[in-house]
Amino acid sequence: MSNALGIDYGRRRMGLSFADELGIAMPLQAVPGVEESGCFDALTEVVRNRKPTLFVVGYPFNMDGSVGSRAKEVDAFVDELERRFSLPVEKVDERLTTYQAKEDLRKTAAGSRKSKNRGELDSAAATLILRDFLESRNMA
Image (tube, rainbow, N blue to C red):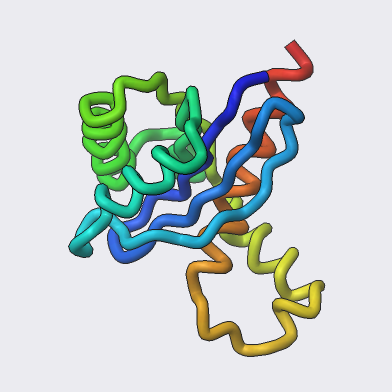
């Protein structure tokens, strides 16, 4: 297993998670989203520090499995990731990951307080996305 950086794409904020060769996905601090200044600077810093060999990006299928306008945004983001970092990108179905992340956080002490860091939810979703990818790869 190689180092993988999980990304929950967002316009204002992107959640991040990381898994090393042990294959355990852990949340990282969220970074600014694509509509915010510093988005790719922050991602570049994470890439420099964590040295991923693969990006795993949540892909927003509609509930009926179709691809909508949000997925086209993610496609453009994935193209930019590949151009800037020359690393492979895997897209993973992210339907219901934010909902599941909210439920998971609600059940923990972290979810019982009003979090000032909304990025915590985004990174929890990124962790679920990366975990789904890792689990599907281990089953192959």
